[in-house]
Amino acid sequence: MTAPTPSPLPQGAPPLHPNEASPRLTPLASSALSAAMLSTLERIPGDGLKGSGFPHHVLGQLLYSPDLLEPFLEWWVSAKSAMALSVREQELVILRMGCLYASDYVWKHHVPVAREFGIDATELAALRNGTYGSFTPQERALLVLTDEMVERRTVSAATWAQHGRQLQPQMVVDLIALMAQYVLFALTNNVRQVPLESTLAGEPGLAD
Image (cartoon, rainbow, N blue to C red; front, side, top):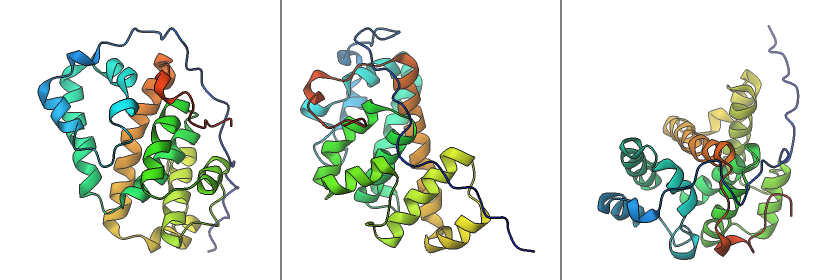
């Protein structure tokens, strides 16, 4: 029996959710981050999420649940070096998650990180448009699976045969885990209407 051909997924980014000057809840101050949390955050690969790129506003929202935030940060940061995905591959998926969830906050925070790990302006445009022809077969497989899991909550038999089987078993588990992390970040930003830090205002956004 031949598997049905799935309908094509929409390309590009959906309309942006608002990031407003007045969030629905005022973020708690970063000074409320514990010493353990700050120590964990120092281990993030690269410099893009440190210094002027530090995500004060979203962490200030997650601080409303500090007992959840501390173990989440440990998992989030430790996973970056434990995953079977390279940091570049992780950033490709994170940027695409920003597109799929229409989160300019996630996108703009990760553009500087992406540059550190070799993602150029042409590739950023391809991620926004949902066109993956310029990426390696493994990168393309990760991005196609990301699109399907967000849009369909699963992966079709046809996509699995073409792309999923290219990936090592650990890579698929790690991809799902990475996506889950950025569901938390993206939905927090969209639901709480978290404003972007002024230091990142000049970074290209999803609508640029």
